[in-house]
Image (tube, rainbow, N blue to C red; front, side, top):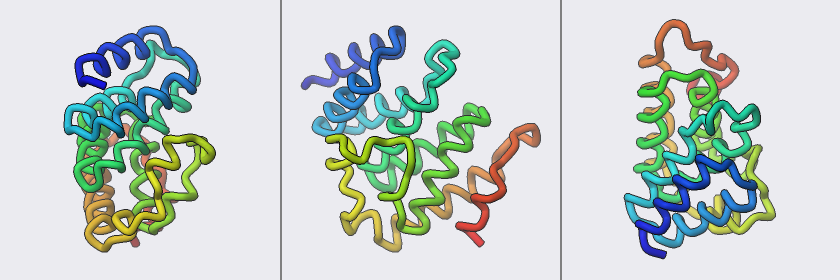
Length: 164
């Protein structure tokens, strides 16, 4: 699928908050495209507040997890997004993802359907997610996130265990 088409689907999805299944279809298309622009679209899906939709967590979380398909660049992108937005929900999601990445336990993440094609394509048993450079980037990013938060953001202290 061309990136322009994907961009249209992402914009439409954000406006209409369609089903989780449709989100997963968009995420698969982005993974299949595999470009940096597709990664940017996945980040857009993850950072959207979906016009205040109460259960946006269920849409944000799988999107932010999907950025890991792009490896260390995906880690950098979600960390940058959380630092720039300074929203508690985004910080908590990104911190949790990074924490699981540091521990090499991405397959235990919540809020992503483990039976989905997205989860299968991410293939968290792949060596790239267990590499020392991937884990080090996750740790560096989590520390970067912690030190760059506004004082008004409540950081999930339990996540600090992954970097100590």
